[in-house]
Length: 286
Image 1 (cartoon, rainbow, N blue to C red):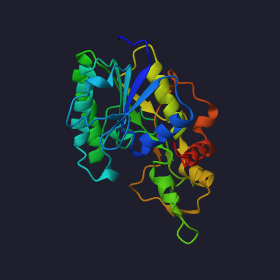
Image 2: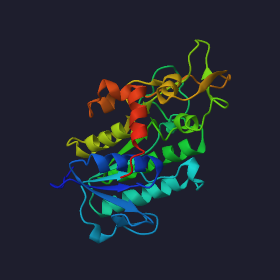
Image 3: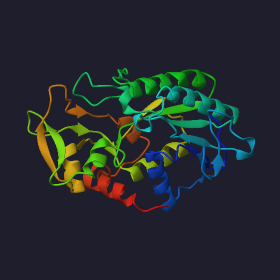
Image 4: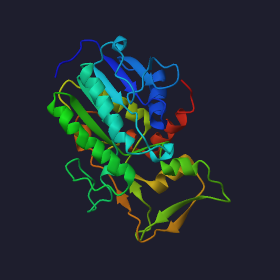
């Protein structure tokens, strides 16, 4: 894989919830690279809509494209546009000779685990909802572009603290209307794979800078799963147990061994207190 000598990264999707978190971290702790932020509307570094036009030639040369742009259920847009957007983004990267693309996928491609073991990148996707199905279809699109010489690493991101259902719901909880957490037969609640927004930003830096070729897909989360109860306690939310319904799954977690070979996590990165701290630091505007 060819490399430009100058680290210059194009970041798309910086106006989304997770993209804003990454940007805020980088505004306080700039990486050792020149960052160019794309936007479709506002006065960002680069005004560009991948769905309607190629990457402007005046944008210059980049060593990595970090593609956080995407359609989520919260946006209300057509989720199938995730596939179209990926095609357009990869075509633009290829035309501009950008050697590496970090393309955000989702752990939703896995669906519910068929066993209790953490999900590995080698496990076959079984998405259960439309969002997961469009992300799985997006990943399939990448096969052709890799065959054409473009390095594309699909990032199957788990829960990002502060962009997840529990912390967003818990932030609105009151003692009169507390957060409800499912309780299973062992007396504990759900366990999920999480990552703090600042840790996520640092992982992106490591992947963009890695000199060796990246795998086709990578699970993105802290190495150890988090109990939802522990996260609620760390955030100081009022909460209460409710009996878990029959359809509820207690453990949906990711095996992040491959990522741990590329990024050196600290023990704190898996701690609910640290994840909540990183989320609350997001109140600091860039």
